[in-house]
Image (tube, rainbow, N blue to C red; front, side, top):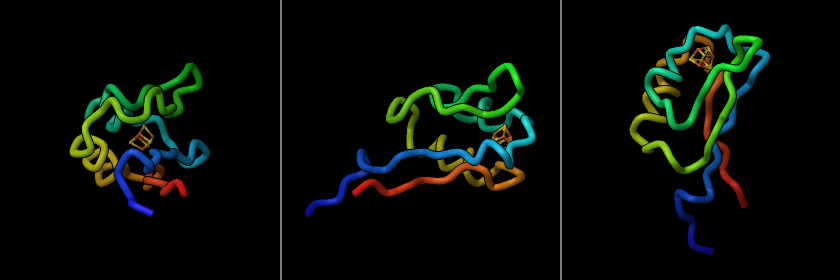
Length: 70
Ligand code: SF4
């Protein structure tokens, strides 16, 4: 089966998140902080792959990753 990037899903490990806000600054269409100060994914596929990758690379606790959907 053909693989495409639309089948990749951004996931966050909220228990690791320290609420620094870096991902929200780098990819505001994809992430926001909730009332508890923890990250939430607000949309899949709206933010660019580049900004999501930057958020993944810059998260200090490695709480963000891609999950391949089958
Ligand atoms: Fe949480 Fe990481 Fe985003 Fe900071 S960069 S708010 S630790 S998910």
